[in-house]
Image 1 (cartoon, rainbow, N blue to C red):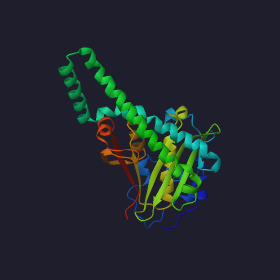
Image 2: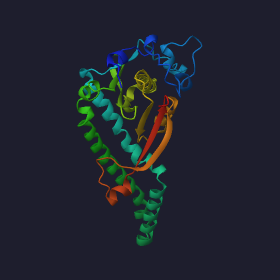
Image 3: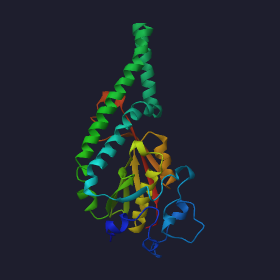
Image 4: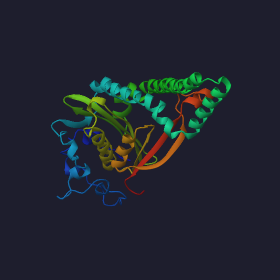
Length: 290
């Protein structure tokens, strides 16, 4: 597979791309065209048709304020900080919100509470059991997620320039708003499967609700189309519904979930399985048939 240099893909302004660079070969029948992912514009097709219009509530983000560019070495610390803060937000979500999707653990915790009352015959001690359980869930969520973060900082995030910008089929972008790096996203291609993976998407919590994450997702889709990939895939352990709605709004389809996903930082001990579980969702955006 021949890859376009990152400069040709990444330096374009998000709202004013060059139309001539975005045409696809006629010999590749598209399964999903941009017009199927986003509403068609009334004017003749241009490069901007690859970028869906910004909703009315997000009009404060304009091309003068927000633009997406390729990663530069000076962005290293900002990118690591945004990713770190974004993943840390999943600690309370995994510990508390995640419990609603774990019916077996709910039953187990209820049985433990009943047993405590039967054995102690004390309402006071029984009322302490749920608090103890939630405390243990928070402890294990924090421990495992922070260990996972540490692993990420020692793999691709330790040298983004080397891992993404100097590898074929890969790229890393940053979103710039008000002169600051406020969002990140990466793409890593798999030549054998002709698939590109969307990775490391995160937006600074102070700048959310401005359409930045959606703009970053569009940039990965544009990259995949320019390099003639057949599909884009991603995986997420996010609990918040907003994250899943974002992927669906970009045209991704939910293709599966692993109820007991493990990461290298997990020991899979009995106690750990009692107080921590991860649900791993897989999404796919099919661009063309092979």
